[in-house]
Image (cartoon, rainbow, N blue to C red; front, top):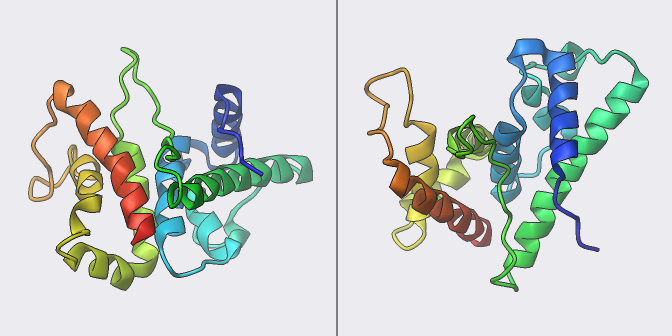
Length: 189
């Protein structure tokens, strides 16, 4: 069974639930999409009690406080649907070149998607298994798969040592396409 993509209404509802639980510390649905994508590409399996707290900016499950059980169930169900949809798309991408995970990229007021939060979430998700990702980065043939993620994640970094050159708007769409293709390559690797 193919998991349908998230609707705009579901994205908005999940964002609302996240803000209700974590307030201003809530990660965006875009960040979470990148975070989940990296974890799914990583050979290490994580338990929900490991991967869920960072979604809310929390250290442990005990630090997450929902208003009630209905809110908890709805939020967890949406997060699981998002995570399962990414996993489904990545599994299908191994045998179907037309099947790609379309990252959730939020648009700015002008209608442009930047991908910075997705890439930052991706790097946070990859941090769960640094050794596996170091092996990929060191691979001459496949290591470039995640370079677009680094470029986007550090584009606006407050640390001038890490900050990347601002990406030209005409080049951004190309980098976002490489990011999507790189995700499939990282998963296949």
